[in-house]
Image (cartoon, rainbow, N blue to C red; front, side):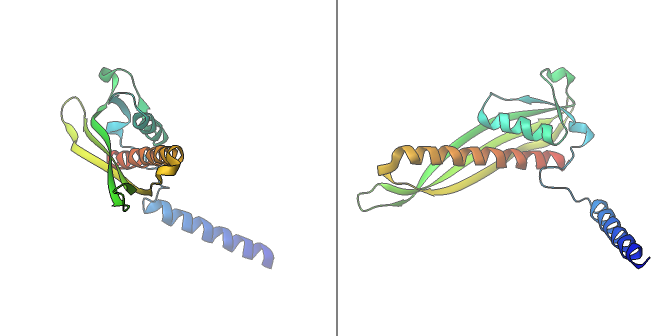
Amino acid sequence: MRQFSRHFSKTIVVLMLSLVVTACGFHLRGQLPLPEAVSVIYIDADRSDFTRELEDSLRGAGAKLVDDPAQAKAILQIADEYAEREALTLNTDGRATSYKLFYTVEYLLANGKQELLKEGRVEEQRQYSFDSGQAGRQEREEEELLEEMYKELALKLVRQIGSL
């Protein structure tokens, strides 16, 4: 009987903690459900690695993506997206030994009648060392950093949309 009581008590505690966590609005990162106003969305953007990540993130948040803006409750326009690289340090020969990589996305979210999110911007940046003797490896590292940045930017944008 005592073992049953202990098991029952543990079950009650777990259920209470679950109730408290869900009641406060806690969601796992990337799992924020989107509001009804943006549940069916059209993305107005050129195809890119970033837009593919954005589509995956929106689907993961429960959005239905449509190919026709007339069927959408909201239209997400990617006004601009660009990468920049800035030399951080130079060696004695004047060659860069480290860089800062920036990726920026500018967007606008609207439904047919009004802007839901005014012109916005999300940015990510990363730093990395550069060795000119290993240029091929360095290029792959930069590509990997960009892929990581696409994912982070897509999640940031979905969180901003989810905050409506």
